[in-house]
Length: 346
Image (cartoon, rainbow, N blue to C red; front, side, top):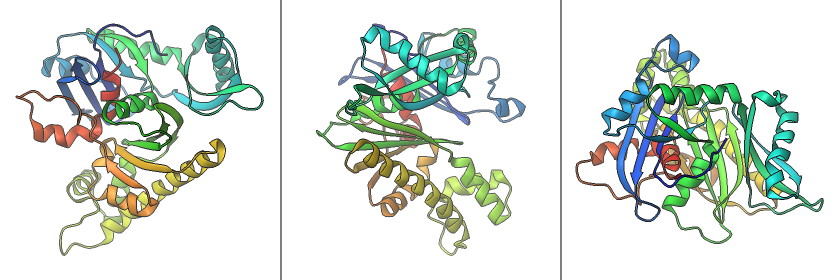
């Protein structure tokens, strides 16, 4: 899935289930300058339910942000994408990709001619059986081809197709100094799912998807308060866990009930990581994705998990030229972590 690196900056494009995020830099690590940052909600309608974009949507969004064509590093936002922790026998590098593909075939049942896969070594130790742990990524080739065709039809060339866990690792690496032996975590909470990663010493250690997203919170408010979903969405964005003075506490109760479920899944993941990989606790948790902007969410997760949690700003180490709307960048920044990680690929 990951094509060879190129000697040029790529446009990072994250097509989610509710929005599209685009990041584009000039320069390299330590001296990146922001050239474009775009966030656009996907249009509603029958196509939204099938994940299809209107003709010209991507090209118009890119052009409206001053980008004239170019090469793209895109998120593998296809329905069949999966990632799993597997162990394969230690072998030469040139044989590893085929071994991982064979192992993934057995897990997914996809025919070899409709399977694309790749992997990343984790920082976990080799096992006593002389195998090495990796995180394998796989998807239907037909769906990946369709994603690449989408960009071709938009006048763009998809040079790299990347997965959310490795994009999050790249975004974290851009902005943070790694403390030796410290476990860090990021969770990207979108509209329909959350992607959790644990990282240590510049390596991806653990990744999983959690079936939780912002639409679950909106639906809970709509049903519990008898609102239209559009009104519930506006209420959620406006107040989050901080209802206006004198308001009924029911909205906060509904939101915290569902967020407690997310915290339970995070806690289970951290416990599994400690037990399975014989690792220490997670020191800090960075929240990103559109749902991370929910007011009061970082404090609630910190209190519930007992782990310092922060809303991520993936461009805090990037030079921002004059002319950018700094307030808009601040508002959309938590949504941009994956797109930023994609844009650091070269």
